[in-house]
Length: 616
Image (tube, rainbow, N blue to C red; front, side):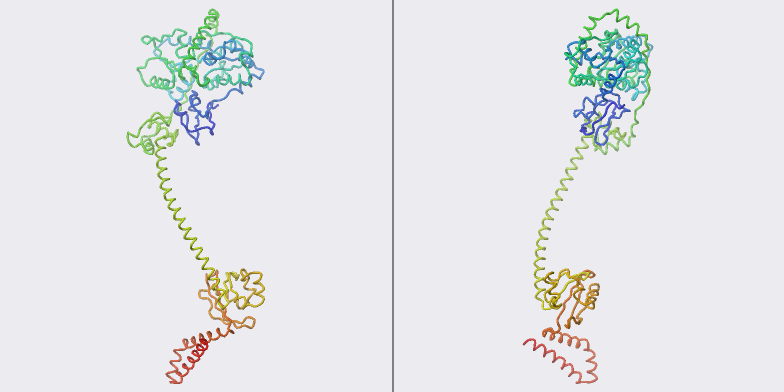
């Protein structure tokens, strides 16, 4: 059974639970506080300090309801701290009546078990043979020694707790088959009950808070029940057990500062220090009577929150006085003599949960990572849950804590993060401005390209030659009207459906010998220049050039029957003849003399003649 569990979603990582845990049984895992059951001593402090109620102890309500619904006889044994917890209930008889209304067959006082245990301690301390003991009335004390001070386990008093003692009594008196439910202020008692399997067995443990929930669920109040009283045997001064020094005062154990051998203390800090000193100091020659809870059991984690310690203490004392005034002392003594014969001894088992400290190099490495490089960095604020920075570094090295639990480390990281964010924001702002400028420039360029495209398109349409641009699949990307006119009526018909033949297949518009030229040119480096072709009895001159090799090509097609094209073409071709054959003409000139020169003059005169006609 895991005594303490966590509602992950509620955990705020405030580390309050770690600060109050005496055994450091809580670690941060997956962003929530997790209680390590092996190290837990059941004190319940973590539950009481958890403001968001993320931590809760094992709920026994349903198990108790199941017991009460069975055919078994169930006996409730109530802790003597009830008088401090239930001042709102006017009398003990009303209180007992309310418990029996839940279905309990008997209700007995653990105070009687405390009477028996107190007498056993008196005998143990009186028969002093040089060995000092730690009392074992508080389960958290037992678990702390077994897990973290195993060297002192033989100093644990070999006496059962009042709860176990009373369970033995009721089993003896009412029968071994009876089921027993302990009602008290202690969460550690839930763990203790699981360990006992003999005639001292306690089947379930209800805290006072859980008992109140049951009363509310079943609508049980003082006005709805009949009076009843505790079933025998009745307690005596054992009713003082829940307050510090109360039980030993009841049997006259000497607590005199000069002559006594007993130190009584309470509360988390005193509890921890007392055990450490008892174990390590040879000069501390005293028995230890320890209560984990500050004020004793009256302030246990199973009591209602907000209780006032001194008021509860007073209520317990006043209740004890009343019980003693009306009690039958002779009957009490007779019962005590009878049940003192029960075996109220017990043994303990070492369950060593101590962890080795990391080596000094590892500790220093952690401290350095935390930013603690000099003595002034060791502020020992305790916000992480550990008393000193060094203790925290050790816990980090042991895997019990994480660096981000350190508040100064977090603040430094936060400051560094803020600086990084600031630098990043500045860079982002510069980038944003650059993007805005780029967008503006891109918009200007886009408009310029658009204008240029429009201009180019207009120019393309004004060119007297046919112009076409195609892609690698010989699909027309762009063309002009002259190109469409050159192709004939079929192309003009298609143009009415597909303006400028965009997307049309060139192979369906031109013969294969021409489209093959396009296919060749688009994949070449230089393309094709001034190639004469005949289409539909038209003599055309075509130049095809790659715009983007393998992707896009363009072509210019001229109608050779147009007069202006004829003149220009004749001049161009004669000039080419002259340029290509100049050397040959010169060589012939040497051989033929003036005859060659006259030939050249005749060619030039033809060119000039065409040029003159063109000017006219």
